[in-house]
Image (cartoon, rainbow, N blue to C red; front, side, top):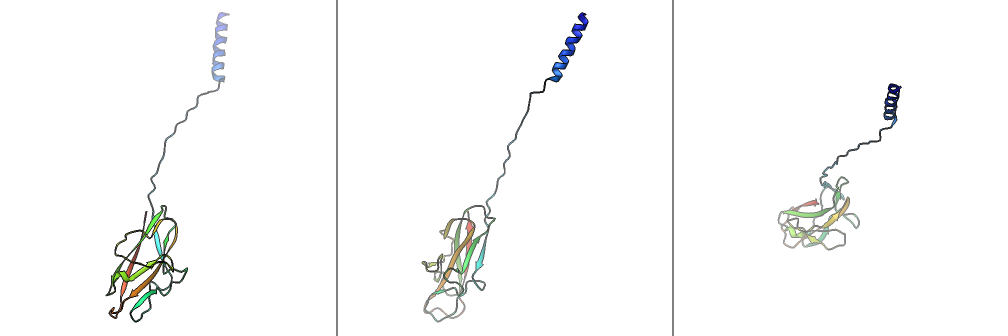
Length: 162
């Protein structure tokens, strides 16, 4: 009888151990990170014929505007493209060719705004902390008396940086 009780007790213990659900759970985690680089992308939109175009004339000429610009239509629009993921500052500079000094080539961010001479360095930003969108540049030229006849030119550069 003693053997039977011990056997029944052993069976009861085994049934009890196997019938109890496992209560332990384990969870682990690991961090993940990625570094996203700044992306700056711009393009230029021209109001008409390619480039900033002025009609000819007899000097002195003051404040002659790009022939394709008008109030609300800038000569050039700097377009900050959608892939840009930071705010940018937009700059302008130029180089003159011919006898007409760079200071005679001018720009403004509005049609009736103050005309600023283009310089040969990027200097101070024209627009600051700008996002995706279009930013206007209107252009004018002054041709002083005594400027030699012939083609006068200016190459204008636009830059956006974060």
